[in-house]
Figure 1: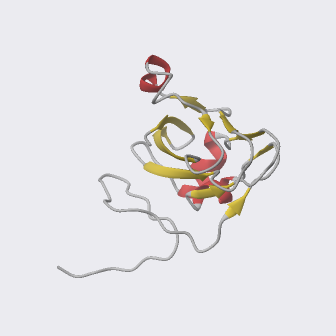
Figure 2: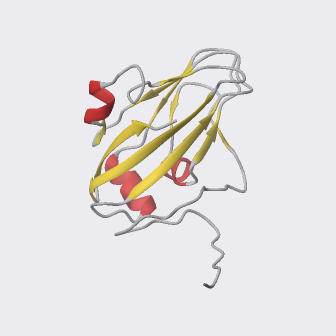
Figure 3: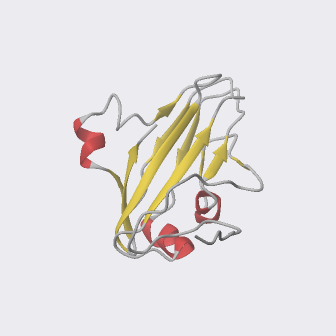
Length: 140
């Protein structure tokens, strides 16, 4: 089997891509803000804030365009708050909603708070129901 190398996010439009994402540069959000679609599209956001920080995800329209998403596109977003001194909260945006699993199991799949310090890592899986709307679930 041949090996392929990609630079940037890889989007599967009708299948599953195993493995993990690697980004060349961290996208720091160190104060309450809305993440840009470009920041989220890298798959990796860091926070080192001493103050509680809320990161609002981009709209479904903006994120869908950045990822060339179609119905069925799936994408992982990692939040790294290991160097932060306060919690980071993830906030839903227009056309970006917490999945049913997240609502039904709020303490795990719906956990929108990323602790500070050594346990301050989270992975959210974003799944598009159309080119402009997505649901997200905490998966780690």
